[in-house]
Amino acid sequence: MALRKIEKTIKTAGKPDLIIRLAKIADMRRIQMLYAEVYGGTYSVPIVTDKDKMRRAIEDNDYYWIVAECEGRVVGSLVYAVDITHRISKAFGAVVSQEFRKLDLAYTMMKLILDDITKTKDLVDLVYATTRTANYAPQRLTETLGFIKLGIFPNTHKVHDNETHCLTGYFTETGLARRRQRPRLIPEAEPFYDIVRRQINLDKPTIKDVKGDYSDHKQRIPLLTFESITAPNFIKNRWKKTKNNSFFEHITMPFHDPNLILVTPDQGTEVYLTYNQKDKYSVVVGGVTNEKSFAVVLESIARKVSEMDMAYIEVIIDAYSPAIQRDALDARYIPSAYFPCVKKMGTKRYDCIAFSRTFDVLDFRNVKIISLYKNFLREYLKLWRENYIELAFKTEPK
Figure 1 (cartoon, helix red, strand yellow):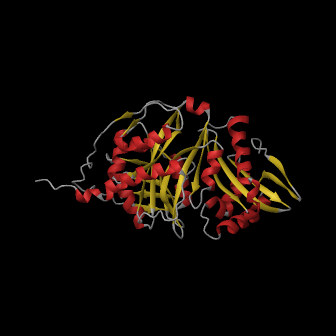
Figure 2: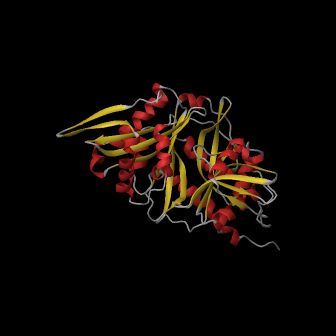
Figure 3: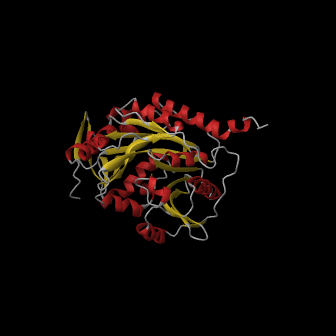
């Protein structure tokens, strides 16, 4: 608790005061009731739905979990996960009871922690968040706080309907000063970089139009056979002892602890993933392999998680490895977000690109996104059409 000390009183005309403070173990049931009030039974983030994980987060110095309380009732909640080693933070789980939304509670809670970890204590170089697209409010909230629009995650979660999320980031001057310059991008990633570059001062990238073994789409990508392991303690202990090798050294996935291992029968390839059966979401966290092609591994992962009824798979690749970026696109993982400074290596911060693959029909009927996010979506859909539809209309060789 030494790092965390947050408390603020909000005066309201003719109504009881609101207290914003750190959450306590005694708040757990009331916090869950708040999320149930706002989301019904559809909220799927384990740290809220799993009592043991919630307890650990409330007690852990790696989290700032704050609540807004009014007369013994929890009416607002917000979590910041903080990785001091890698100087990065993630804000998530912002929720406010309907009757208190005119008080700008979400903004006040977000700013309290943001200022504390970036200015007062200088704990992190950047903070990121993903915002839902059921309405415009979360996107405008982060925009008001100085967050930069970084991309979208199309159809990233599925409970009742497909949900598209937006990616946004807050960068300190220190973080940007530590950024490795001159990313090396495949041409398909350049438009996403340009959208971010127009918002913050980034240098001009090097564009490398490399081609992979499967870029011509004339030969089918061969597949690895995977077995799955979901034993939580085994995965936790094995992950601690595992050091990424090969192309897995070029990926990152902050704040995701794996709960699934995919392993080939010869144990030549082990892939660590986080997956959520409730909302059919999965991401690649790391791995080891003796396979030479990342396209082969990614295509094989896609088939396996699809068989496990996942609707979405994502991998985040550094922006300095165009051959690996090409492999991801050849495996039909489509870029959708550009994330400056997200990966810390030594004293430098590396940019990354988010690639994803969805197994359901794309559905944007209920998506509400503000201007720049639409630009990301347009670029994503352009590449999706090229890789999933236009290939069928290419002229056959004579």
